[in-house]
Amino acid sequence: MSKKIVFLFPGQGSQALGMGKDFFNNSDMAKKMISEASHRTGVDFKNLLFEENDKLGQTEYTQPAILLVGAIAHKLFVDCAGLKPTVTMGHSLGEFTALVATGAVDAIDAVELVNLRGKLMAEACASQAVGMLVSLGLSDEAVEQVCKAQRDAGRQVWAVNYNSEGQIVIAGIKSDLEELVAVLKATGAKRAMLLDMSIASHCPLLESASVPLAKKLKEVLRDEFVAPVISNVTAKSYNSKSEALELLPQQLVKPVLYKQSILGIDDEIDCYIEFGHGNVLKGLNRKTTKKPHFNISDMASLEATIEAIKGI
Image (cartoon, rainbow, N blue to C red; front, side, top):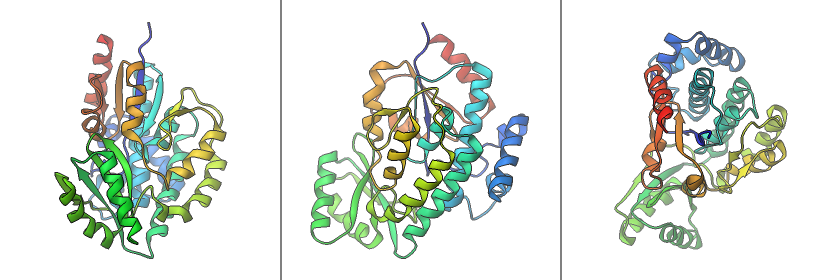
C-alpha cells in the first residue's frame, strides 16, 4: 500500500541567512538551479542566500529565495526517494512552491513569477504605512468580530492568516493595527504583537497587484498536475490551470485558510513533509494534527526523512 504524503512548503517569514547552503555545497543540481535563477531574474541568489545583506527581508527578494530553496529541497527528495505526493500545499507564498512540486510550473519560471509577485505587493503597499500583527489565544470568531467592529469604525484591518487554533495574523494600516493591539488584549488575547512586515498580505489593500499577477500566471502555468494542490483561498484541492488562474490572484486579497486546509486532509493522509528552511509549518501543525511531520532543510534532514518514512 502506497504512503499518502502531503508535501508542504512554507511562506514568508521562514527565511534565514544561509538557508540552502548545505544543498549548494553538496549538490551540482542545487548549484545549477541557483545559477539559472540568478541569470533569469538578475538577482545574485548566491549572495542573497549566503552573504550578509539587507535584501533578504525585502518582499521581492524574500519570496523567490524561499521558493528556490524549497524547490531544491523537493527535487533532491524526489530524485533520491522517488515518491510522489498525494497532495501538495503551501502557506501563502508556499502555494507557488507547491505548484512547482506538482509539475504545474517550472521551478525557474516560478522564481521569476514570485519575484514579480513580491514587487507587485510592495508597490501596492508603497503609498501608505501598512503592516501585520499576530493574535494569540482568541477564537477565529472573536478576532473576526473585533476586526469587523474596527472596520465599521472606519479602520482598515482584516484577519488574513488562520495558522492554527488560537493563532491568527491580521493585516492592515499600521496605525490601525497599533490601536488594535490594546483592543485584542482587552478582548482576552494572550498576546497581540506587531510583526516585522512592510506589506499587508491577503487583504483588499493588495487589489492592484491582482491583474498583473494574473497576466504572468497565464504565461507560465501549464496543465500538468501530477497531484492536486490545496488552495489557500478555499481550503479545497484543484488540479488544473484554469482553476489556478482563478484562485491564485484571489490569494493576494483573501485570507490564508491554512488551519482549515490541514483539518480537511488530515484523516486521509499518513504524514507531512515540509521542504525548505526550518520547520515553521511543523510548529503550526502541532495544534491541528498528530500525524508524523518531517522537514527537509539540509542534506542530513533529507537522509533522515527518507529513512524515517520507510517505517510509516
